[in-house]
Length: 292
Image (cartoon, rainbow, N blue to C red; front, side, top):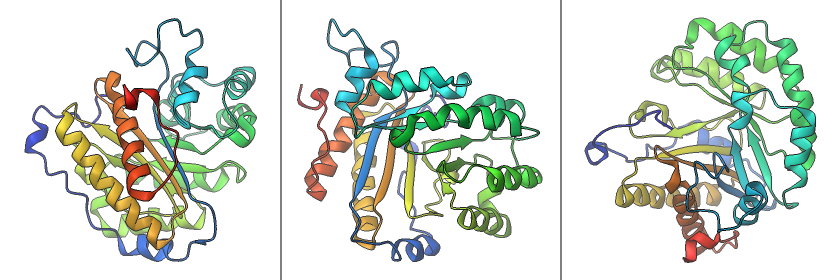
């Protein structure tokens, strides 16, 4: 994942911004009696990207991956429209508590840019719904050049997306965040339609880390800088922020770890799980790679 990559991560201020006031207002309304669900995983499970993660002789990568982590940010569905039988096969290879968070196809987001995508969206949803109870949330990621002038397309997509499928949206153009009037309009749209606003933490695009939740769910896409010390310190800061959000009331957290060199993603994900278990007295599944 090259998005937000920088040559000198030690020169970047990785301090997490203060929470948006509306984030606090949303979280304090959460039902603290509900169970806390935290999902941590990588973006991919294929052996080519996660080298040295799979034990020698592993026959099925997804089966092993899902025995180590409780979720996957599924990028495969971005590069090709998913098919019903493939989704069922993936679903049936994983444990009951495993969750998929598939990205919406690039045909919808990048090629057509949300223009005349009703049929494609139905095709995508008809396949994805077969994850059944293992579907965590789908997410729409827009290109950096998708700007506020296209707001009507975004509004139409969000308002017509099937309500039975939880949706998150990642906007990448700085226009959405550096103009208060624009931000208010899009965040109000998300809140009204129960759309989760994706938080992106990457070295070269600190403007995307706005700490603005629009639902009582946190969908965080963390991109490491392939700098062991800095990357772990950044995750330590996230643990502290999540601790604060849990105290306020949040009960759903989805945290996915990327790296520009993906081989390190499982290591960072495992590090985060160890820290969450220790600091929050949780019992998240501990991957074998964490104890090697």
